[in-house]
Amino acid sequence: MTNYEDNKNCLTDSLQSLFNSNKEVLLAKAIEMFPYLIHVFAPDGTTVFVNEAVRKQYGITRELLQETIIGKYNILRDTSVTAAISPELLQRAFRGEIIYCPDVKIPLDVLSERFGVQDYDMEAMYQDITNFPILDDEGQVEYIMAIQIIRRVYRGREEIERAKEYMENNWMDAFDVNKTAKAAGLSRTHFSRLFKKHTGMTPHDYYINFKIKRIEDKLLDSNLSISQVFAVCGLDYNGRFANVFKKKTGLCPSQYRKNAHQY
Image (cartoon, rainbow, N blue to C red; front, side, top):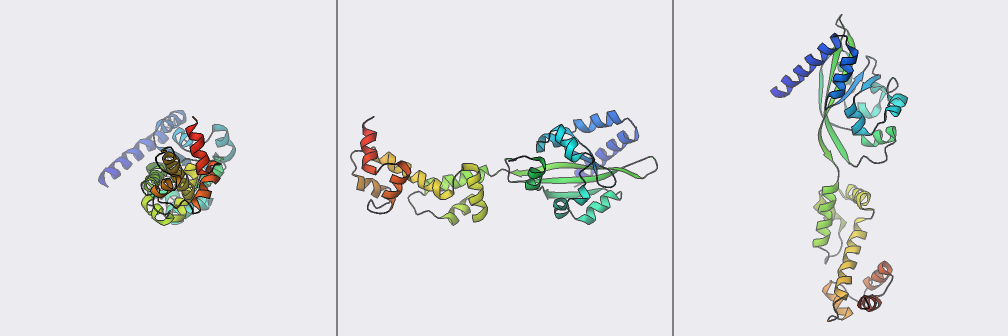
């Protein structure tokens, strides 16, 4: 925490000196160069500036910025913000205190709707946010600056890959969505939604398609009867999966084998 406090104080002093220099062009350029996401607000909560890092992170065009954000968006009236950060803390920041808000979950669904971005390609983002005042020559709050440092991002791909690996390693067993979600480290509901988002199919469809592929591979082995093919895949040829195979491939197993051997 000591390192954080030292860095925070150094940054605060540096930015305060820039504001006090009254060199607005220099100030804007300095903020623009910072690698962190920076928002600047008027004392009433209205946005007056965001830097390039913010625009790139959230896919905001300069045109959209002027149309919907600068001079229009008010952080104190945003219920998604007050749900993530205590309104009392926000008010203290706008009264002149330096406020540190760790591990804040950013409402990506709200940002997506606000900025017209269809998919941020991530499930969740957590940031440490420091809000501190910039004072005028008389010691009054002139601006509030919020610096956001991204701590972690969940994109969902690793979880989905773990689920795929689990299904592929256990394809001989009956499909169990609860076990598969557990292998991915996700709740059942979140897992099913996330899996379809990243693959375009349900977990059960993925499992069935993988199983079909294994049957197709075995059907290429003419030393095995079709019944034996299904048996080594843990299935009964006289069961329902023969119909599933035909529905998925458009061919019954014997037709599939015949066509495959023609090429």
